[in-house]
Every structure is written in structure tokens, then in C-alpha cells.
Length: 131
Image (tube, rainbow, N blue to C red; front, side, top):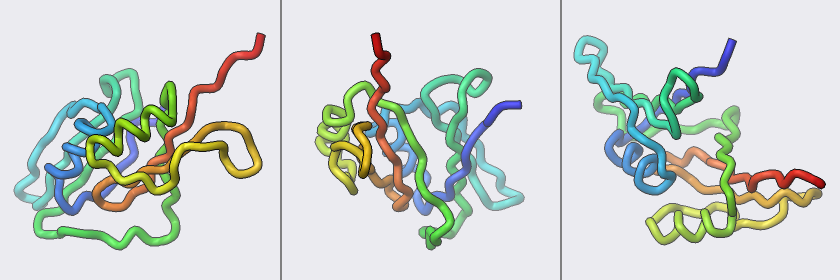
């Protein structure tokens, strides 16, 4: 078994695709309209779906926003340098929710950003191998 994708609902699919590709550096892997169901799916990720977990962005036609609720936490992305990633995301117009720095009660460097629909994305610095 393997994790295939995580689905997030989008109120503006083009805006979401622009965020994940232009700001977070993912690729648009595929996009398809489903007229009978009145929705569009777009898949974005850092590599092909055969070898990587990806994000499915779902746009239900005519729905421009969602209440996020309290059950969903965040997505997590590993980055080489959290401080540099935050600076680049900010330069590109991304929203930083929690600036880069050590996690609470730990030493791992993290930050949080928000996508256009308010979903939180944690940036986690690469773990350094000891020795």
C-alpha cells in the first residue's frame, strides 16, 4: 500500500494552481473537467503520481469558499532551508502564518504558510544526519 494523494477543496482553482506551482514549486500533473458532476480536478506535486504522493485540488463549480472546520491540521513539506523558503514564498506573495524558527519544545526548524483557501502548510527543515 502507499499514500496516493490528499484532496483539498478550492474556491478558485486557477488561483490554487498558481499558488502550488508558482509559489511552492510543484508541477501541474493533470487537470480534468467533469461536466456531468459539475466539478474539476487538478493534481499537483513534486513528481509523477506513479512514484510520489500528490495533492488533488477539487473545484466544485459555483462554490467559491469553504469553512475549514477544526478537524484538518496541515500538510507538511520538507525544504532545504526553512528561512530561505519563507523569504522566497513571501517575495512571491505567499502568506506566512508562523515565521521560520525552532518548533515549540524542540529544535527542528519549521514555519507555517497558508494557501489561498486558508489550508495550512508546514515547512520542515531537512534533518541533518549525525556523524
